[in-house]
Length: 460
Image (cartoon, rainbow, N blue to C red; front, top):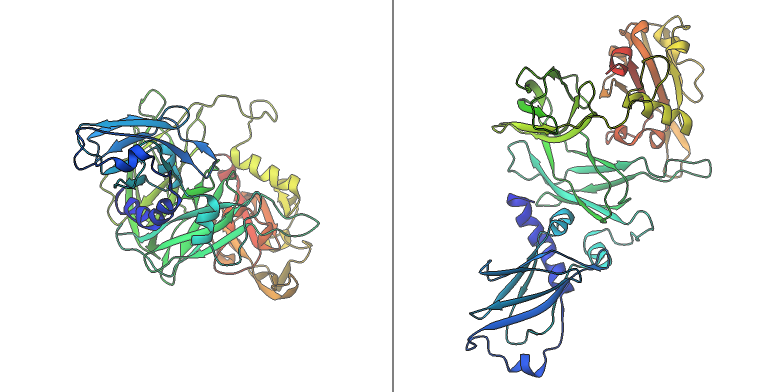
């Protein structure tokens, strides 16, 4: 909510906020009030959240750029007493920041009620009608809006015409039919996008690309609010930068030996004796930094990798509150292992582990027999994996090459074929992209997804 983003939100939503102001009709005393001649000025009112339908408590209410300020009580009420006429009332609260509204502002004039001034956020229906595509209805459980601004890796230039995809694992496909788990949007002339129809309480992933620019996939935590903001940085394909930071525990003590990974990239590193790390050749754009350390909960930290990153990134990690899930002896399941087990239980893909993989004679043979997966070519060192392309009606209309990911970052069959079979721990095959985990839903095509996990990756 800083810098130009805050200014944009003010421009983008201020009309909605102003329209949602409910100004009580002035009483006789208020109507007679002349703010230009009064020795003192008193304004009483209430601050209300129309998104969650409740008063906003502990909001900071300021008169005339902070000359006089107060806090709202538990019913959202406030009173401002100023020695000079009040011309403007502004409300700040972390809830307003979190929702992207920024602040609420009311201009005080002779017609403004001084006995009951109601400052209210716009309702979801009002915002939806303003920013969402015509004809798109508000569905229960999918009444959220993810929005933000897309910029290039210089941190300033806004990107118009980029495609933004927001995806989630909520409402996974079922036997009764496939529910879309995707909300796509385009950035407008000033780089702003609105992805409507997302589940507010669920974690979602957002990423964007254009003809020459691309971001990584970032996670946006679930929230009770239907509005969530996610600004995205799009870097040029092939352009890299350096990233440095420090990892601290709950006592703000530097953590030595923590592993640092960039999600969707082979870049990795470790913290030194001072808890610091430097990663070079990191693809520019919005990325997710993953921190792992023995005895600490793995942490995913969103970061914008810019052309220049002058500030040191500070990442806080917490000790694991509970021991890992025991398998045999002292072995524990990693978060990735648990995610794969969860997907196995859901049953939307074909998953083979090392006990099955080791029985096959080649990489090509691992994929034989998977329903609807077409393997072309008979040469074990050069073959293709194709999945059905779905038409708008959901019927298969042909084949297209599967999207291949190795250890979480996008790869291809050339790399997979050269991978020693003994190093592969798990493969996951999703014939339809809608069945795949949300973070692997690509913008480039609608082909199926093949996930390959090495034994080294699953040990992290």
